[in-house]
Image 1: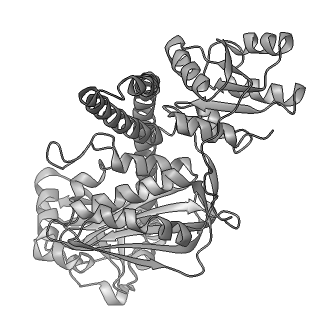
Image 2: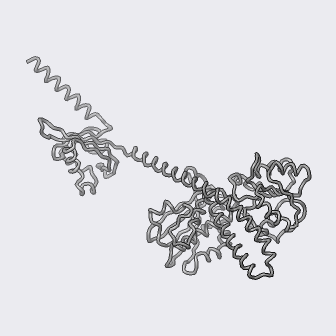
Image 3: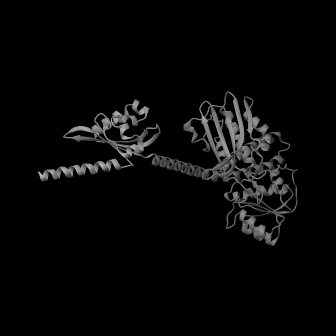
Length: 505
């Protein structure tokens, strides 16, 4: 009897210890169900996670922890059946607390047998809402990184091709100017040359959009009064939307100036307006708005201006939204679009130190929001003077012989004598030996020193020497920030003339 009593006491102590352990676990809801799903035991973890005291929940069916949708779909009964048939049931999903709030739960259900008969189920529930939220944030960051890497790869591809194409366009446009003089008395040849000139300008515009997407376009950021700029291009925007679409404005009177490249801003707005027009085949309204925003996001933080372009059109399907900024992607019919308009907007916004966002609802319309950094007080925009014609000697630093030939021809027509060298080292030797009146240099060139480095070095040793830079694109050009004037390739003779006229003397 003593041995039997000792065994019973040990069993009692073991059961008591186990019960105290289960009831004392606070991070897990550990409880028992009878074969029909009625709750027969409850621990402190269940009370903490789900909000019910033992008196409130014992004798109740465990399905009350499920959402109404899951109960209607028979999920609680299916969970018990799977546990019974397969020996275990595991899942993650939404569960409901006593106060009606939801939490993301990890659930395990094990069947309990005694002498081969099912006597109930052991159920373990964990609240893993924080872990799930962290995982979702990580997945979102990984998606953003993948998108960024994709755009960088596309940018390298488009930027490299566009740079070479700009040099070809420079040769074509410069040669056209010379040929047009010879064709002054030949109307048929003149029309052909005009058609080539139109095509060249179109090619230059497309290349410019590619370079902006690639963020390799040389830009001249400056403070811009947005309301004043809109007033200046209002007619152009109106022509872009056509007669069947109404153009409206909602620009707050206290909108800060923005810091951006003027021509790229105007191109981006026109692209968005035309895109909005095409989304409203039966007409509608395009609204351009601007408002001040203060951001605390990463990497954008500080004072910004949000520019909204909103249409009342068809909206953008969700499966298309992730692709709209890719170059050459378009849903328009063949011949109706290049697929470069929105990629230009994307490249411009990010190159300016901001971003672009889109919100769309099918059948109700779309809003594109360009977020740009706040600028200083915007000065009034100067108007260009009459074409400049000068004299003297210019040192042309250009490694491409065909581009150099065209540039020499344009400079000579403007009255200059031209000396040409192929790299920065040769330019320094030429200046030291003979001297020149000003330097006109490409930025991208072979050798240890590029055009921008040459300009900075000349600024030190010859501070009074005028310097004009040119580029089809250059990543280093983004660092100029107004230190030197930059002429974009391909340029025409009047653009070259105006750039030279503005050089300090």
